[in-house]
Image (cartoon, rainbow, N blue to C red; front, side, top):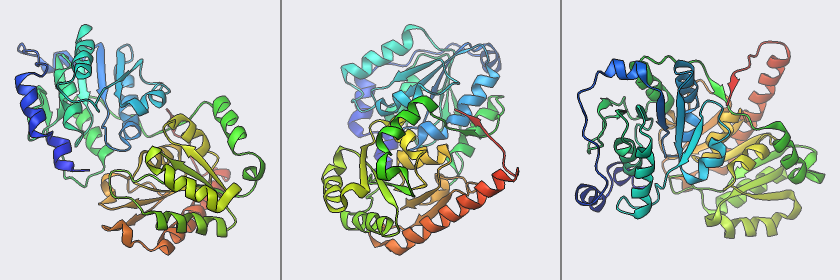
Length: 372
């Protein structure tokens, strides 16, 4: 991903927004604290970078606790809509056309939809979200529009200065909502309806997959270059050599790779397309661990409490809490230079740590966080 263009938008997009894009509404003078007290229609906009939907969970919970009777809408990317609908802290999920150009009819129509029943408060939760998403918050027509300060115009009428770039995203956004008088309510773990999840696991993780270790491997690249085909083949082979079976999460871009791995390893691998994140979540809960680059599947696993090996080509502190002991971090600027032995060692450590945590939980040392 070209991060600067992602945040700032292309020159063409910025010019188009100025000349023919939807216009922000003109603000009246506002009593900010009064507006915050009276807010009854609230729009929450998670970051559209990887993991944004999941990292926003504590914020959704805190906003619901603070505004118990408000109507809260959650704006998501198309691929997150189904999973977003399972979040108990929101009343409505809106699907944003953020893959569309700002001057497109779809983008204009969505802005009109947001303005049809105006919001009192819109909060953009992404410290480094896309230009298009930040503009949707600014153009929403909400009386109070809150977001992180950016170096391009966004039409926020309350901006918060971002912390250092490597700060964990959740901590940055929790600091933002505290400035609005909203106190956090503790951590949130994700959970999928047991009936649906059990049915999916029984359907896919049956037969040989119902015994022994099952390790998930996400073939996706995330926002970076990702691992190459040889590395993925090596990882899957090492997993199988250790007596485990592998669930392979893939998207259309990885179809050629997954076909090769299926042909090579036969019934010891199970491919599952990740466009259904609710299905991915159900299968992850049946896996002992996940190996993944910085992808949505990795952040979903962390939200579910599934042990993971996270492979990053940037500072992982931006993406993973230092208090999260279920994830083994591997950082390497050039992912193609990673030793697969490091990945396998990380998997062993993650599984051992999970086994220790399970024993502590049985002994009464664990605690149960609230669920989303």
